[in-house]
Length: 152
Image (cartoon, rainbow, N blue to C red):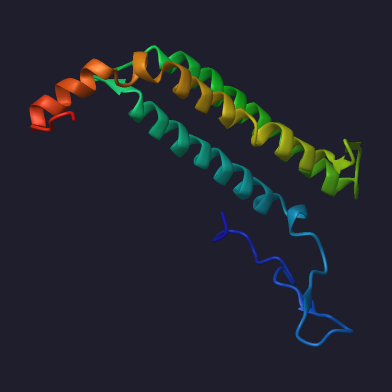
C-alpha cells in the first residue's frame, strides 16, 4: 500500500519552533486511510502468526487436540477486542477526543482491559489442560526412556 500512495506531508515531523532538535507532527498520521488500514492489517497478521503457533503447538501425534476449540474461541475473541480497540482509536482521532473509561481514553481502556486480558484466557487454558492435551507425565517418562535419561 505504501508504494501506491503519495507520502504524507510532514509524516516525520517538522522542526519545533521553540526547542532546537525536536520534531513535532503537523497532523495526525492516523488521518490517512491507507496508514490506518496498514496498521490494522498488520495487527491482524500478528494475531494470525500468534494463532498459527498456538495451533502448531497444540498438535499431538499429528492431530489437533481438543484445545483447538478453545483456541478458536480465544483467537476470535482476541480479534474482536483488537478490532474494537482499533475502531475506537479511529473514532477518537476523527473526533479529536472521545469518552473516557476508568479515567482513560476509550482506545487505551480497550488495550489495557481487552487486548492484554484475552491472552491470559488462552494461557490459562494451556496451564489447566496441558497434561491432558499437550504432554502427560507418562509421555514424558516414555520420552526419557527413549533417549536414555534416567529419572533420579
